[in-house]
Image 1 (tube, rainbow, N blue to C red):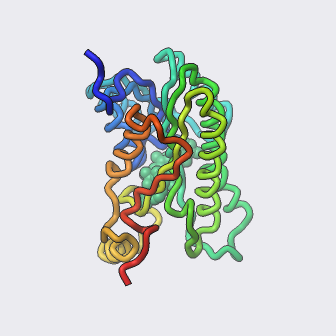
Image 2 (tube, rainbow, N blue to C red):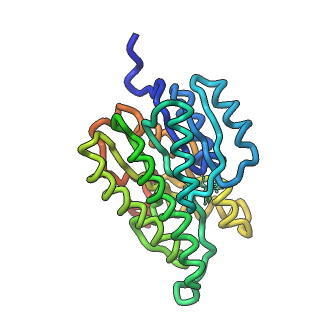
Length: 259
Ligand SMILES: NC(=O)c1ccc[n+]([C@@H]2O[C@H](COP(=O)([O-])OP(=O)(O)OC[C@H]3O[C@@H](n4cnc5c(N)ncnc54)[C@H](O)[C@@H]3O)[C@@H](O)[C@H]2O)c1
């Protein structure tokens, strides 16, 4: 029997930032669609439990801790996927950090470099080693942000890092095309995850909901799995003619405001 079109049956997929809100939700969707998932994160608290949970769905899974700003650790992560499962078909490069709100004129070069390293250098290193390991085509999805194509107050480092992810996505799509490797970016709006709580921890829940209502045409934050559904689709063969795309999943944030 052939696999359903949207399935990821047997595909080996790396998920970075896999213990965070969007990463864990997406890893569950991928495993549920039959993917063999290698979850990775810089923290390893709960990694083995998540891998066990994923293995109980339809696919096998494993957890590897790695700091993706370190090239040797990225190389070892990709090698683990190939050694463990025999191949690499896909990757969701989703790890990232937020930036404390700081006006550009007050932002230190250390803070700027730090967010660029975690959000952009890591994606470059992942693409470099993942694409080299994809022997039979593949699909890579990078998590940028609505702030990958627009500005906002007090977020110069984060915005620069997410614009860089969009640029890397297009560069990699061009270089991967001949080898059957598709590379796309997703651009979430505000998503209800630990990153969001950390960024707005001082704001009470009601103020946070009101801010999300004003920002998005759909009047609310996204749930992590609403972002994961788009990543899962891009990783599947259903998206076989989609590459180099920057796809918003932002409740209409980029489309306009209800004035
Ligand atoms: N939450 C939002 O509103 C939102 C909006 C747009 C884009 N994003 C992007 O979505 C992605 C996932 O964010 P999230 O909201 O799930 O946040 P999260 O904080 O829940 O998850 C991010 C994960 O990345 C991991 N990570 C951080 N630095 C790392 C490193 N050096 N090496 C390996 N892993 C590292 C963290 O440990 C964490 O588990 C990020 O790239 C973020 O910028 C989030």
